[in-house]
Amino acid sequence: MPVDTLVNELIALGSLDEATVADLRRMQAEATAGTLDADDLTYIQALHARLTGQPPAEPAEIESDVRLDGLTIAEWRDRALAAEAEVGALRDQLAANSP
Image (cartoon, rainbow, N blue to C red; front, side, top):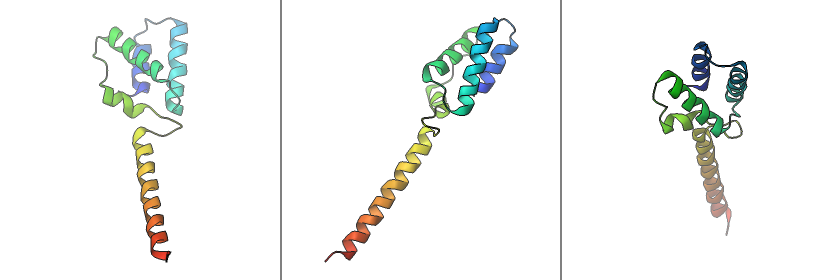
């Protein structure tokens, strides 16, 4: 479940104090910006599971929301594969042009 949804559901419960709501809003903004710390994500998911009685998200779902320097793991993988393909093409080109 996306962080935005988890936070909105927690706030809708109406049982959290103002400081906790402020922290959750801050974390929600960080998630939107792609800068949410993995520990904060774990905290949000655990709090949501405890207060709503719903099971926490599967680890694969957690990883899909995590971004490093603005990119997901899948996006980094795609960039690495494209770079490897380009390096291979350059090597082939150099090998074809060398005596």
